[in-house]
Image 1 (cartoon, chains in turn brown, orange):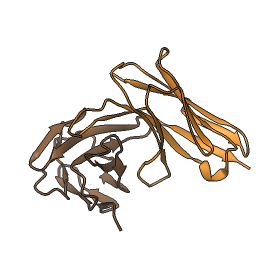
Image 2: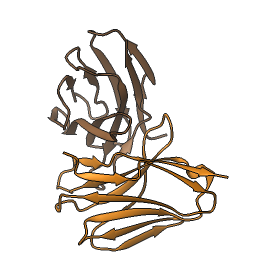
Image 3: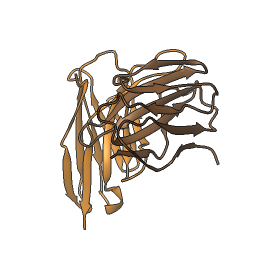
Image 4: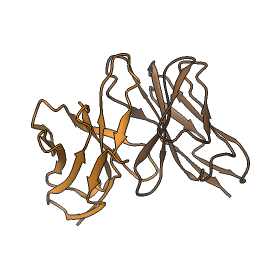
Length: 113
Length: 115
């Protein structure tokens, strides 16, 4: 059963704590992405990675960090420097042959108390 | 700076009616325009997409109309059904070799289809 998995579905953290969101894909896709979704603002790109051990900042990278040590995995860390971290976080991936099609995971809803 | 503007923000349509969502873009380098459908608590799913060299694409009840000169494109849902109730996002992308293409999303339209 191929796809993208994100865990956990819901995450609660205290203000000032770093938290890491998991994203795993078994689609053999080269590129992976992290988006943030807020009501009324659509999806905004945080970071993306075209290949293992390489990643680039998106439009709203401040306060976030990522790593890409394996092709299948692209974890996102929300640091204490992110001023407003409460949001719905979506991970996506795309393959080399049909790079225009991004497939999304089910998302993680992060609430910072 | 919002490069893809979407309207309306919300839409209520009667069952069997036509739902129309509009988007406008600014960057003429965009060369692929997908629409995504998102149900509450789920990730978006690709619904239909169009390239700027065609003016219309139809898949079942879903049609994209594209006006390159006006830099506008729209989604039409014919015979709208309650199961179509979801949030719809238009998006734009410019394709580059090697993948890692960045999607720019509109702000979304919350569609409700009433019985």
